[in-house]
Structures are given as structure tokens and as C-alpha cells.
Image 1 (cartoon, helix red, strand yellow):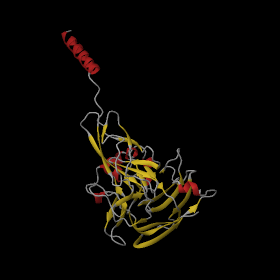
Image 2 (tube, helix red, strand yellow):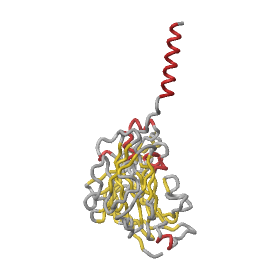
Image 3 (cartoon, rainbow, N blue to C red):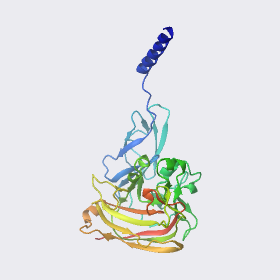
Image 4 (spheres, rainbow, N blue to C red):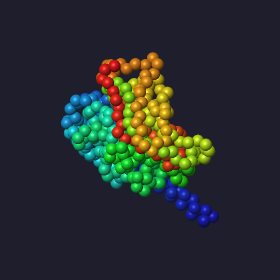
Length: 361
């Protein structure tokens, strides 16, 4: 009986302690959303793990902006939300979690220029564990490419930046170039039912929070474009990996192939962006350009893909001027890589690419 009493007292003590103990303070230090009071943003800000990119119309005065942020519960930000700052250069913010221990630094950039249309893949952001390709005008970054590298980092397979599916190499047609390789995701990927990761690069953003739960939704395609695209052109090399697999299982007699395409679509409040689930099926889609004769080649091979307007679709000049159309360009080393089908080692090199357009419809 005495032993039972001791156990009972211990249980009561544990329950009582858990009831009166204060709830643990939140250890998250994230920026969840961002607005610019008094300034029209052309699309929703791109919020990544340590950076935010805000898009405003060309000619907007960005020297005295007062961005306001929504944070995880209990977190604080320095400088304070609503502080006026000069965004002619990117600005740094530090978010401190409610527990006062965890902190995260964000670099916030405001893009006030037209989307870049010439891509030589010479420039990347420094000091990162994997390559992040950017386009610059002088010293200013005017566009940041997206890739699935952030998702691949979760596998723990890559040891260096060159081990990721998307990286830079010196074997370009002119200088450096983009290199996309289909990689194994290792034990972690096999366990999650995602045995491979195709190298990819695209205009848009990658939502790392969806990388495991809904990878097709993680690829958010497109940024505002105020011109009518006519062609996507450039040079590529391609070599397929030795063994094609579907769901990690070998498929004999099937060869991997790359994919290169671009899409233009109309945005709205209900459809701010397209993703891997609806890039070619959304009713908002206006026109597409896609390679239909991709092949293995060890020589730099020129491609020039015409944009084809879908039946019944047209581009409204007023909406075009107001930035209501998005464009996305996508390169990937495995055509079916978004469904985790492809061949490990498939390699696509891209260089000297260009989005050709005219300003009038």
C-alpha cells in the first residue's frame, strides 16, 4: 500500500507541475508576411528562409519605404516594423523569437526594375551553402532565380555546393554556365518516397515548407513581365544518366530527357501564381514555349522556342502595363523529375539564354 501511495503522490506532483508550469515560449523567429503601406506591389513578396524580395513598379521611389512585417507569435524585429529605410540597397533585419534566444537575420530587397531577359549564369550570391543564381544591372541584383536546392539540403547528402542538383560550372559556351544534374536523395529521400532530385532552375520561388509535404506546390512559377514574349532562346548540352527509374525502380529501355520551357499567365487575387500542379492546365495560362526535340548532345546546341498563344486567349494591353501577367522560364535535367522519375547523373548545361519579346501586342 505504501508503494502505491508513493506512486500516486508522484503522479499528482507531475500533473500539478505540468498544470502550473508556464507554457514554453515560442522559439520560432520567422517573418510570415510583408506589406508596403502606400506603395503598390506588383506581386506578392517572395519570403525565403533568410531573405525577402519585394516587387514594385519601375520608377517607384524606394529610398523612403516603411515595410511592415507579420512575425511568428511573440517574436520581435529590429529595426521595428514600419521603420523608414532606403532600399536602394538591400536592408538587414533581425528577428528574435519569443524565448529571447533564437534569432534569424533577413536580407530584404526591393526590385524596382523590369525583369531581366538575358541570362549568362555568370553571377551567384556569395556566402551561401549552395548556388543561388542572380541577374544584375551593374552592382544591383534585379532578379534572383529559384531552384530546389533548399529542399535538397534537407536530405543531408550534399557536402559542397557542387554536390547539389543545381550549381555553376566553368564549362560554359562563354565563361561559366548553369549545370543541372539529377541526384540521388540518399536514405532520407528513399524513406520519404522521393528517391531522386532533378536539377532545376526557374523564375519564381521555392517554398521549402512544402518541399516534403507537397513538392509540386513548392515550385511557385513566375514574376511580373510587361512585354509580349515571342521566343525563348539559348544553348544547351545534355547527357542522360545510365539507368532510368520510376519511384526508385529501374525501367529498362527508357532514356531520360531534359525539359526547357516558358509560360505566361494572367494573375489575380485568387491565382497570384502557378505551380507544379497547374503550370500547363490553369485557365489563367496565356501562352507557352517548350522544347519538343530535346536530345542528347555533347556540343553546344542552339534552341529557339516560339511562344504559342492558347486558343481564345489574348494579352490585354492595360493589364500588361500594370504588371498583371507573370512569366516563368524553367530548365530541368529530367522531364519527369517533378514526379521523382529520371536517371541519376542526367546532366543539362545551359548558357547564353535570352527571353525575346516585343513591347506592343
